[in-house]
Amino acid sequence: MTIDTIIIYSLSFILLVLSFIKNKQKTKKALIKAKNTFIKLMPVLLPLFLFIGIILTLITPEFISQTMGEESGIFGYIIGLFLGSITFMSPFVAYPLGSDLIAQGASVPIVAGFLVTLMSVGLVYFAMESKMFNKKVAIYRNIVSFIGAILVILVVMLVGV
Image (cartoon, rainbow, N blue to C red; front, side, top):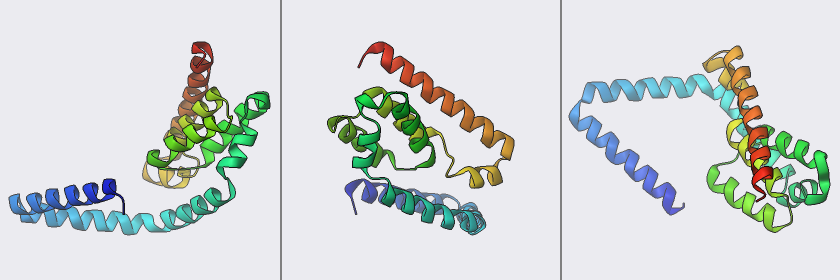
């Protein structure tokens, strides 16, 4: 367990205790509501976690850097946007991965697009997002996020990083 995880769990526990001290009924009600929401989302979350695990074992950093190198052309941009859209990683893993990809020869604009879609486009979460909000909102949010990723690529290309 990392220090970040320990800090987050400790802070959550302290805040839970403070909430319980302040108002026992509201805290119990909130915990019951959280448990029920968690149970309701489990049929969507379990396959999602399984899918993410499979994707992360199949798509290695070496594969990504080979397909997103400077010489990959438009194909590299398409691959970067696509892989970012269907993959999910924690920012604590994604940003060092982006740094490693650049160090291994991947193009900075392609990595920027990959990271933006990785963080904002949620095709992996589409089923859950559709269930929680609605399908139309999920589609619009993903389209706007994808367009935003393309804009980030263009800005990075113009800046010449």
